[in-house]
Image (cartoon, rainbow, N blue to C red; front, side, top):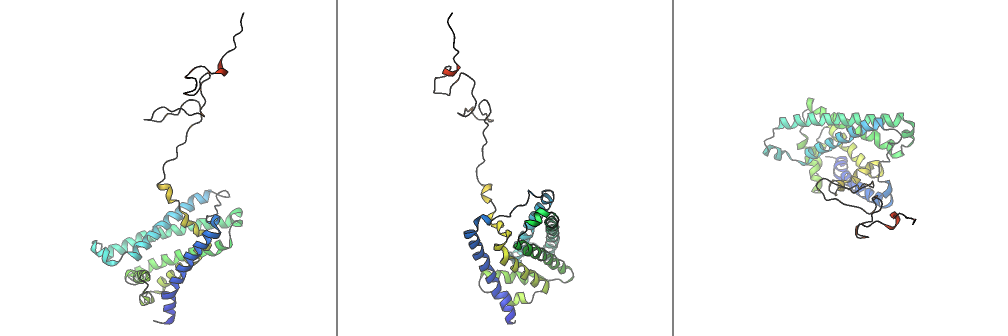
Length: 268
């Protein structure tokens, strides 16, 4: 284990975490209105309707697979009677398909951004750096997944041990130093992406409106003629609804004809 290993796997992760937290806090404090994807849907929507959901849903599966693979120890899966062969076969199949779908969705989004002039003009400097880096991270992850077919490597005994040791503030540098190069490359590229995260449009991931899942429903009331009726509810009458001529709201005139509706009857 050399000084370079200690710097890469023992010091760099904490620097990236500090940059991520401090950068996000600074961005929220001084650029709160910039917490957005800077949507370009008005410029082009056909490719966006295909590539956007494909990329995001696939990325959710990829992140979920990483969380399970890095945080769930091998002892737990053995206790749940999940064999090592079944675990790796599931990770290879689902992880590979999710990674390919994420790459395909990102390719559509990049094609749209390069071919549509209005979208290309709205591309910022950070986008020109983050998009290629995100693509390389995904490709490196696919390469690491595919490499386990020809070169069996149980990352749960190496990369996962190193990742969990970071939370205990005792990084197991040797576990990561002994990992294959493709796994080390994937980890370094991932840390670079997280370091740039607060300074790009990726920061919008921290503004997911989770409150929408728990807030009450919004009731839209009709402004048309007549009362608003809902199935199983009593009849309601709203003061802004159009009423039949000659009638006043309840409590005002007790249903008598209003002054405006009285007809002027002339005497003979």
